Length: 242
Image (cartoon, rainbow, N blue to C red; front, side, top):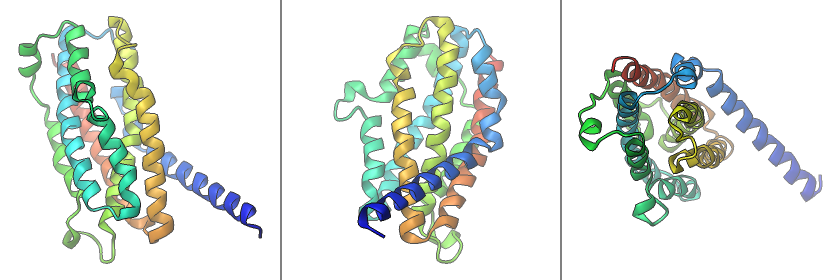
């Protein structure tokens, strides 16, 4: 086999693995959660914007910090996949472009006041999600099956988050069309998350192919997908109870 043919074969294998991982996530019950249908069809009110974005911000803030912890346990060959994601979340070196600030600007553009935003209750489902995912973004070695690679579990967790994040932003963008805000800069996430998704899938495949860690990757992937059901329960409850 020539070098060029071998390279093509490896690339095809990588692509197949990435598609298989994405399929696992998109076929999971969390990807069909009623939250998505609700967002695509609701005529979202200002009170609902406050409830949704406050709860979304609560989970996104913790995720940014967990990404930093995940990066810290990655082998040198894998750190770059994670740090590009982190850097983007924090504005690529410009704090005025950080994603949390964009979320707040979106809320204010929808007529949410700072007081209204801060008074929103963080839903139990969101809290449950956050408690659950910590152990997969930064696993305790003693609580994992023998010989499981901590970083591979974290890679699976990150990948689950990024696959579903793209679905989340697409659905939220449709909800905000009713406010004339579908083109707000925060919805650049539809493109940004597509890039993060590619990076996270490559990260997962990196551990599967170089560390023989498919079981560890799938543990992180599946556990975070399950936790996403709690997250979406919380976000939906925030929307329907205001």
